[in-house]
Amino acid sequence: MEPAAERTADDLLGAVLGYDRVSGRAGAWLAGVGALLFAAVVWGLAPVLWRALDHAAWLGAPAGNGTPLAVDGNTAYVGLYAAAYLLLVTPALVLVALALVHRGRHGARARLSNAMFGAVHAVAVVQLAFVSATFGDPYSGRDLGDRAHDAGLGIWAADTVERGWLVGLAALALMLLAAAVAAAVRRERQVLVLLLLLVPALALPWLALGTDYLVPPAG
Image (cartoon, rainbow, N blue to C red; front, top):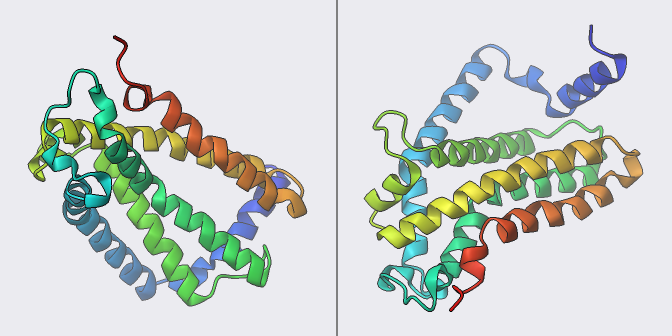
């Protein structure tokens, strides 16, 4: 038997999300649209975004860099590393923003409007698809680096995108932990605690797991 506090939290989450609105035919329609969106992101949008980052002028057009000089090492691709990392965690950050907007306008216990309900679930599907794409294509057996290379990225850029997205997974795990900690404190402090914890949750993995993109090789 679950503790009363956990049942209350589950009931509150269910009341806020309002899944009773998608029972029956509406639920099947939502699941179908979600599946189509998931497939479109994994096999369509993700490779397009990787290629766009590789050719982005504001990142120095990494596609034209080729093999970096020995004195630069992976630091030649630090912009692409940062952009790929931010791309992976962006849907989660949008979800946080949507939750804070809803809470600020309607309160922590208010039921989501239909528009907000749709937006939250669309963004959540995109995030799930990004996470799935990080583990490669289960049908072809191609890993993330291979798929980035198939999308037209050079080997250095493909490796950089792969690193950025894998590091993003670590950040997502820490973001979930931050949300769990924030949910456990008093309601009036939850937003502040969440925002304070999100800073290290986002910064620490990027710094700790990407030092070779941030620090030039010795010698």
